[in-house]
Image (cartoon, rainbow, N blue to C red; front, side, top):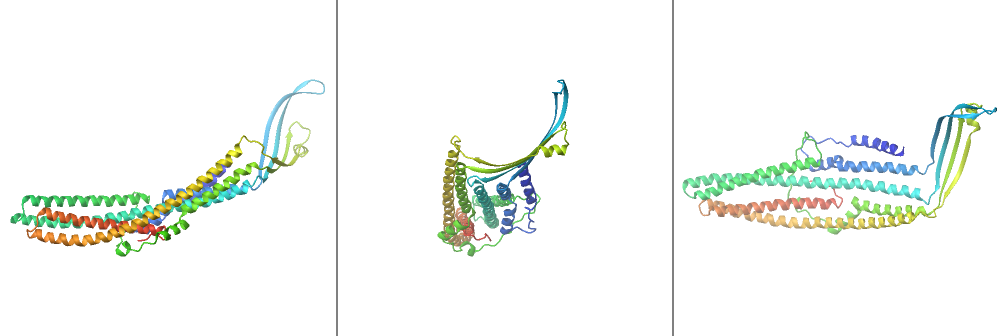
Length: 443
């Protein structure tokens, strides 16, 4: 019966909550904040964490209810047939309808503090589950940020590839004129033509990459097939790429205080320590109060139904004391396992702390590395652009051959791609680093 009540209670809480999970979708292009806000409310993993939290609320109510008396009513109804001997010594058949009724109550007065500690343990579990929800929300926020910036990166790469294709088309037209004038050989023209085809392929590949990245973000947001989904592309300048990175020590100390995984791991240690005390409580005597009221009736009685119930009324009140003497090492084993569980929880807390430090250190180093690469790549783009423009002019005048032109072009494109990659790596790492410093992710 208790399981049925618990399941029904959980469903009663869950169903209305699931209805409230949906959030109105943006009608225009989705910016990063739109994506994050929607994902934090509608992601399935986040919803599952919320349902688990609601379940622990039910468990907490159940634990608190153990402090109150229990009350049960039971009844048994029967019909019997037997032969009875009358006063004359003869046997005759007799049928009778019988009924019994009892009301029982029990209350735990003392059990080594297990009840109050169990309530406290459940309160800790409930609080820890709240941090589990926050962890799920943070995970999806980071995943959405990474996916969104991957789209921006793919979009900028596509723009570069399209500009390169336009340049290749102009070079192809110019090469046709030079070929007709006899200024270049047919083999040189073929190389330019092959480069143009290769640039077309790069544009197609970049378009497909952008489309795939958009699809992955849409799937991450768990949008339906018919949902409108267009991305807003903000302009990102050097002020965001080269923003000063916060100190590693500042980020780490703040993360230790605000990150839900740290709070969750500390609560798990506290919960395990309480479990030790709960297990040790089985060594102590337990005292409980019991009370009952019972009566019965028989249809063959000479008394009326109400008279029988009154005459056979039985009332009992008792104090029950249970003193553990030997349970085949069950109590000792439970205590030892609880202590080992505490050690495990403590090790998990240390591991969580180290993983957090590893993450923050990696992000900080990524910011420093990406920013330095961006500065170097920007200078490389400037020099590569000048060199490429110079070789292009010399090629047009017949002073440079096709191989030299294409070499300079590839150097120029490599510098641009390195600049784009460093740009978005720097922005992503910086945003995530500030996220661990308890700052919202915004573009």
